[in-house]
Length: 429
Image 1 (cartoon, rainbow, N blue to C red):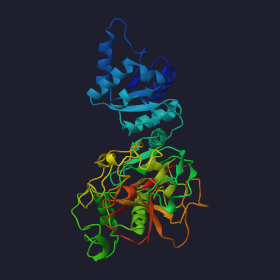
Image 2 (cartoon, rainbow, N blue to C red):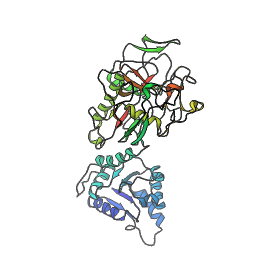
Image 3 (cartoon, rainbow, N blue to C red):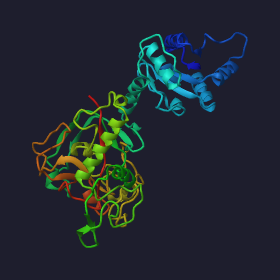
């Protein structure tokens, strides 16, 4: 096998030479500058020929490579020639945006030492020869780089076809609840207190959709009950035959699923964790849950409000001004009495859609009448036999109920046509 090694001579030359030596010791040819540059032959032509004849391109990602026009051109040539590009991250350097355009995350490898990286590359390119050095699995090495990318605030990622698209939420502090000066304030929204979200976590970019929930039910045959509460134009009424498949209005597969209880949400999250375990425990190295059951869970009430506010102290994440509602939320003033496909309204500063309106969202916490004495570390309040909290407001509510601080309680068995949920995911500590 023949590989082209692209690197910056400013800060990646020694690693490039060591990697080439390890690969060549295993019986594979490498093209590397300046070692393989022939005198008297035009340099650009040599680069084009070497890349065209290679099985793939190995990119050593360093600060120098991120700034190098030569490296960018080599990556462009490899992409145009439909070559596999395997980025190797040195010193935890992420590729610059121009390079990221041409490379994916599936083949990313973190630098350990030349022999381990060579072994990972041979697995990436499908070569079977062994390397005369300590061997680390390609997947394990790749996950190190992928974990670093996933932990980056604002990163978007998913773990498979049936998994939600996640956004990484940074750790931080915020003031939870509403001030006494808010004319719409409810007593259960205070007293205001500072809460610390001590660890970053991931949250689904959108509420769970009809299609995503349908995949879960198709595999597990989960029973979502014989009825749900439907708005009949006058009142919310428990209606036999209604449920997530027929909430009383037409939905697309991209609409948020509704008529699901807190218990249904827990069953869905358990299914995601089972899917993750079945895929491969090794593939999750460094990304496992800190608690029982798995990394997928409901957000805590504090995490939800922190993510909803996204740094804002206003009534809604976008403003104190109701005039902007049509841009940011589906609510009683524009929904037409039904849900709408997720992501059609503007995202907040964390990149999350539909945090205000469309459907209410279950959180993990049991309900407390106020915040006095509750945890200030972002963890859930878990009293026994408690009603559970829902947040965000729904398609049938006015602006008051869509405020970031508004909170309502329901039985964990309750199912309503304006109520869904959004998964969170824990990183390891």
